[in-house]
Structure formats: structure tokens, C-alpha cells
Length: 263
Ligand code: GLP
Image (cartoon, rainbow, N blue to C red):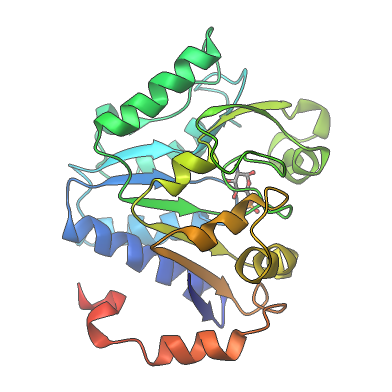
């Protein structure tokens, strides 16, 4: 896993946006896996700015979002569809027919989840998956104890995640208990994973993910097994890493051709 530590949140967001923009420029018809939560908002703002400046074309890009709340229709203000519309899709030229979400209102959830997996396969797989991390180490909505080989399915949120996400809903009582999420195995099939984590609240999960044992108790730890995974963090989220100096050293000595500014 490549670990990039930036001094500020803004620099970390710019780094992730640069990695994503590079992917879009290298392969204009790429498939992006997208994430929600507070963390990627700044990344989407950077991508929107690049698009507005004429430097980034999403016309041929296909997207698959990681997850969605069960029971929330697409027009619900707290749905992840609404989130993505607000922060990215209404501001760049992704074609609506290329946008995919798990459907939280599907009547046959297992069949819908199987169809979502099939749609990802049909699109040729995900080239780059953007990820955040929950304070308990979840990715997508794969809570602790999720099978590390899991596929898209229904999950029950932990009380902690319900609490963490209540800020979007107004109260804990309004947060759905169930979600549909790509599985850990689905995420691991992506050709590249890029995780952004910022703030001291994520420092513990980040250290356990990058330097602890691989365990279903912290689903993000499986990313240690991913062949092309980059973790981008700010200095607050890096606070508990043991090998911080080495990660900085690796970044400073990165070969020119591997740097994001080159494309
Ligand atoms: C939700 C999302 C995750 C996200 C996590 C962290 O649970 N399903 O994909 O990584 O929140 O959110 P935040 O970035 O707001 O801390």
C-alpha cells in the first residue's frame, strides 16, 4: 500500500483528485467507483473545478457508487443519489445513463444486488475505486465482521455508524438501519483503490488498517492485500502511524514517471 501524508486536508483532497483526474485522462472511458460521506466532498469540488476549467471530460466515464440506504428513494435529500447529484453529477458532464447506484427501494434486494454485480462486470470492472473509511474501519458500508470476500448485499449498520451519520439526517432515529453495499470482495476486484482519510477521528482506524493485522474486525485492513492501493491522509489522520517517516521518504523519492502531475 502506498501511503501519502499531506500537511493539510486541502492538499490531501487535491492529491486524490489528481489521481482520479489522471485515471480519466489516461482512459476517458474508464469506470470509477465512487464514495460518499463528508470526506470526499472536497475531492469532488476539485474535480468539478478541473471540469469547469475545461481540463477534464467525463462524457465517456461510467460510475458505480459504493452504497445506498435501504428504503430511501432517489429523490430523498439524504439518499446517496442526492448527495452525488449535489456534489458531482449536476456539475460535470457524466451521462445519466452511465451512472449506477444500488437501489435502496428494490423489492427483491438479493436479485438487485446480483444485478449490480453483473452490471459492474458488464462495464468491464472498476478501474479506480474511491474510498473513505468509517471510524470502525468500514469501507462502503461493510461493517466489522463483514466477510472479506463479500459481494454486494444488504447490511445492518452498527449503532456507531448510525450515530456518526445522524448529522446528515437530523436525528439518529431517522437513519435507516439497513443499507445495500458493494462487498469487500467487490471493492477488492477494482484495479486500483484510492482511500482518503482526514482528521484525528480517523487516526486509529488508519493505523489499524495500514499497520495492523488483516481482519474482518476492521474490513479496511484487507486493502493491505490489494495490488494497487493508495492511502492519502492529512497529518492528523497520520498521527498514530508507526512508519510515518518511511512513508514520507518513499513519497519524496517517488520516480518522476509515477507522479500524478505527469499526466
Ligand atoms: C459512510 C459511507 C462510507 C464512508 C463513511 C465515512 O458510512 N458509507 O463510504 O467512508 O461514511 O464517512 P465520513 O467521510 O463522513 O467520515
